[in-house]
Image 1 (spheres, protein in one colour):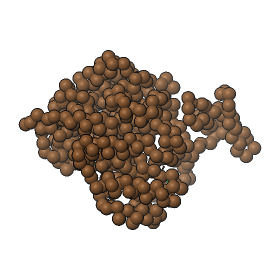
Image 2: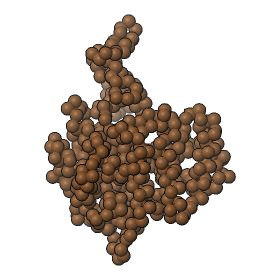
Image 3: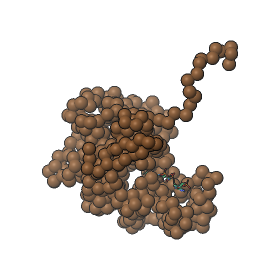
Image 4: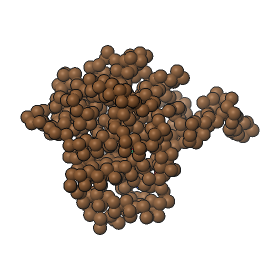
Length: 428
Ligand code: ACO
């Protein structure tokens, strides 16, 4: 029994349960033995008060607006490191030295190509298919092309499939884009950085050389860092739940992509930019603020609010700064950025948003910058999926390596009919 315990009293009966302590953050009331002891379940739809697992990857303090990967603050990682470095950190637990980083980047670059038959697979999709629909399909199909790395009990298979997923995701996302615009898919160029290669595969054409703009490359890499992992969010929990049954990693990541697609999660970056376009000019903001506050109107300020952050999302701070830097370096501007800044200012001084602690999240500004780089809105969530793949893979590995891992199997509060006899067709 842990040093500290919590007592649950139901009627005349009392039950004692251990209280577990993490390295930082709230203590956790361990109710694993509750059903056996009290024949009761806990009820927590949406997991608002439930820790589903133990993890050493990422820590969030939503009250203070803190996000740490393996202990390192996201602001420092975004400022000083690269997406490859953060990927290594998430997967291995420590920052790499130079030769470890070079070795990791080299390994990833060796897996960037797709099985040639996958090109045929793409042709089965309609030209106007959403890139996320293609991503779900193609990533799920990877297990049909790479079944030599799907034995999840073998650490070497796990390592190779993890590298394959991280390496191939930019190629898959860029190919989804190329397919939608009718241009030839570009083979990877492994002499470029992870991010530079992705930009070339997306915006380059075989007919001309493509020069990677270092400002755009840096900004894109930072956007990938900001999306790399975020604790037990909906898509990561989906990956873990799918993986808990022993499903192969390609299938699990496809499940994560499907979950990420929704507008309450990764789809919010697309929805946020569409919303800013609909609002248009700052004079229309009050009307939309009123709509967001109206209980009878389904409209919400997209890119605002978060299940965990009850303070400014630290990723939104970096994202806003990055928009300014890119605009200055590329000497471009977008009136929607002014609209977004004004919207933020008005919302943050409105009692509704103050009381409910609704702040901009990572998606509020990301659309503006992705649009300035040249991505259509439909690609935004695909970029999020690309970057989050490293987080999904790291969580999946952490879970599979845990000797105490069990299949995820929640229970329910049943409210349907109690047992009754079958009624013959003629008597209904
Ligand atoms: N605009 C207006 N009101 C909002 C918003 C919003 N964006 N977000 C929450 N609220 C209100 C709700 O209406 C609710 O009000 P009530 O208490 O009077 O009923 C209250 O704030 C709490 O909201 P919930 O939906 O219960 O909070 P939850 O934690 O379940 O949802 C979520 C969080 C889904 C992110 C929500 O804030 C939202 O829909 N935001 C817009 C979509 C978005 O930006 N998603 C991206 C999240 S970040 C990410 O995935 C990378």
